[in-house]
Image (cartoon, rainbow, N blue to C red):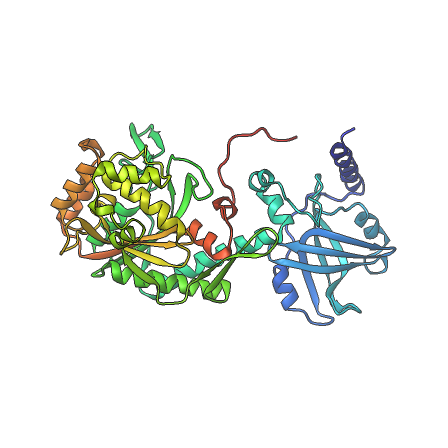
Length: 485
């Protein structure tokens, strides 16, 4: 017989035994004095306390039993003895397993080893676990199980709990940082009649009542700029974006972005804002500006130095640094050079795309410490303001850390006629893809402004030292798979 089926049968037998004793195996409310982390910190010898959590360890010492009671914030030790809870309750206790949720009422005491512990006076069954948890010392090692059954990963793996706790802190601190600087948080539509604000393949749906096709947003940019027109001079949104494109260790079809806009600013002011923000997050979440990335054995394989000021360099100068003759070459010669450098540009059509491919492979992917890449070709960023002294580039930055783009920022284009020309060029002449309402809004006057975007998932990856975006998204997308019964 399958060992897993045997264990399931044993636990179902205990479930029946609880019911036979008149004990509901799936309880109702149980008032507690706080999460485990708070209970440990609030310790006071002899003080009464109420706690609830999952049993994650059980040490049987005859009539004396020690449990670990855990939740996402931590664990506390529970002491159980028949003299304290009574023989009837102790009989019910014997039907419990690792994985079960219980409520405990008792008082604090220190064990001989000095561990803060709750002496149980009363136990209440809150939820009987029918499936055994992953083995304590090995946790959940299989990546497929980690991503498809994240709840098991979070129960078993402290490292995963740490990453997602840091993500919570990062998002909270981003809000606090921006609000303290006068930014207002807003919400914009997630279903849009035109997928604008970025060049990406959208997800398409249909609204029956309105009789119209809609797209899950690929970016909130055009709606946030409408709010600049409306007079909101500092505005931001922490949003979910959706792009119907590939999945990789850096890409998920559903991802989180911060976008923020500040009237009367430019891209250099916004770069400084981002430098301030990420430095604040590193010190708050990581305790300093040196971020270590480790391998599976715990050895440091990379250090990211966030010490300020961060380097700023023009796009063309960076290209010149890896290919000095690049801008003197013909279009065909550039492609030939890429072939000699083992860079596949077969998918690239226009010259600026070839240059961008060279940049991504020889500059971006090799840049570890923060680098603001400025003054990018105008073809790459159709929503940015054109540089006043060089009309071939736009006033933008792209912040690269750890080999990937973390944040773009622009001096926003607010000329409605030039913006129309750019969008029409981007759409390939398909006028139905141009957001006429956005252009009409610009005609009412949008103040000069700086804007930023920050990929929250990639930012969390960088700050926590993980290598895959799937490790910082609670429920990453994967191919459909039948549920294992």
